[in-house]
Structures are given as structure tokens and as C-alpha cells.
Image 1 (cartoon, helix red, strand yellow):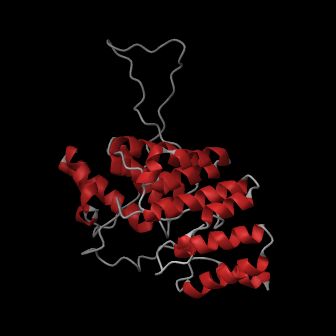
Image 2 (image 1 turned 135 degrees about the vertical axis):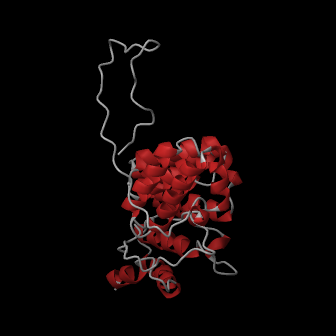
Image 3 (image 1 turned 60 degrees about the vertical axis):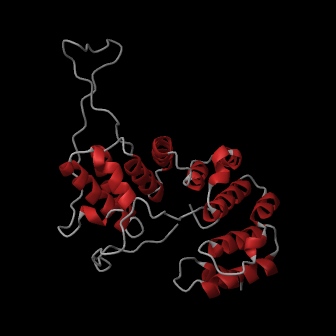
Length: 285
């Protein structure tokens, strides 16, 4: 999605622990801008004395196995988030270590090389498809690469396994990515929406406002974005995104002067250049 109201916040879990991890910032991964292949879940059916192929289902030859992406030798399972490592205890040590290393790589690459991160998550899924942290990683990397239908399936599976509702904003935004803003709006009444932390609540509001704008309802979008957190007592991690979405919605309503003031606030505070607020200001000028 573009920066018109879709979240790009990825949680700590199941990404690597930062403490004690070697510095891989110079690995050479090509930086990319922030702005969505399905894999069979079961093995092919095998005919045998206890299982006969149904005549109405023709035999489908199995697809050739895609080799997993390579992992640098210095990547270790210990770099994975502790709670995610705990979920891998049901696996053999060898498989758990292999899955953990792929998850570490997915976390390291999701911002700079999301396609390779997706391949690592798929390799992890092939070895531990019933682990919630693995399905979560598969969903997050699918979302990051624009595979929205796959992201929905994986994140829903992760939610069923773990009971964690923290990815409701991403689920709603994936519906937007599939051109279904009405389904995105349904997440406003999800029983678990009230269980989100403050950051999750703001992210969901931004996505729902984007869905309203998708439907040609900018005034309703503005109402969703308004609140005391537009003028916070202290700067929060989500403040830039909220200001940007608010400015974009004001622009839709023709309130250019007000929109410009919010774009200016974003551009001033955005020291890392995570948004294109400065470019938007130049366009307005």
C-alpha cells in the first residue's frame, strides 16, 4: 500500500533479538522504499492399501521443491526472539535450529529485501507449518511483498494458534490491498479490537480511515483520525503516521492550508526520511 493510510509497523516478535546479535547492516542488502504465490499446505496424496485416489480428482504431479535461500554461517538460532524460540520446542533440535535461522533472516531482511525475507519465511513454514510464530512470519513477509490474500490466510492462522489479535490492522489493510474496503471496515467491530495496545489502536484507525477514503468518504475518514493523539504531550512512534494520514485526508477535502501545516510537521520530525512528506510539500508549493 502507499502512504495514504496503511500500516507498515512490524512487531518485535518473531524477529531477532537485537542484543548480542552481530552487526549485519553492511551485508549489502539493497534498501527499498516503504510503501503483496501460494504454497501447498499438505503433501501430495499417496495411493496405497489404505488410501485410494478418488476418480473425480485427477492426479496432480507434485511441484519441484524450491531450494531454500542460503543463510550466512554466522546467523545462529539464539538470535531469534525468546518467545518464538519457545514455540519451536516441539520440533527436533536440528529442525528447530534450521527454522529459527530462517526466521532470523526473515526478520533481518523484511525492510530491505522483503522478497528474500518471504522466501526465508516460506522455508521456515515448510519445516514448522503448525507453529504460530512461523505462520506469523509467513504472513508478515507476504504482506510486505504485496501477497495480500496469502497474508490474510497466514495471519489468520497465526491468530487462531496463538490467540494474539495484534495483527488486526494488517489484516484490515490486506483487505484494502485486495480492493475490499468494506471488509476492512468490519474490523472496527471485531471483539478483539479493544484488546489492542495504544499503538495498535492508532494503526487500526489509520487503516479504517484509509478504507473510508477508498470508498470516497474523506469526511468520515477525518473523524476517525481526529482525537487528542493528534496533539500528543510527547512524540510517539506512531505520531508521524497519524499526522501524515491526517494531512492526506485534509488534502482530499480541499483544506490545503491545514494539510500543508501537518505535512510540514511530519517533514520536520522525520529525521530518518521514512515518509515522503518533504516531497508532498514541494508538490503543494
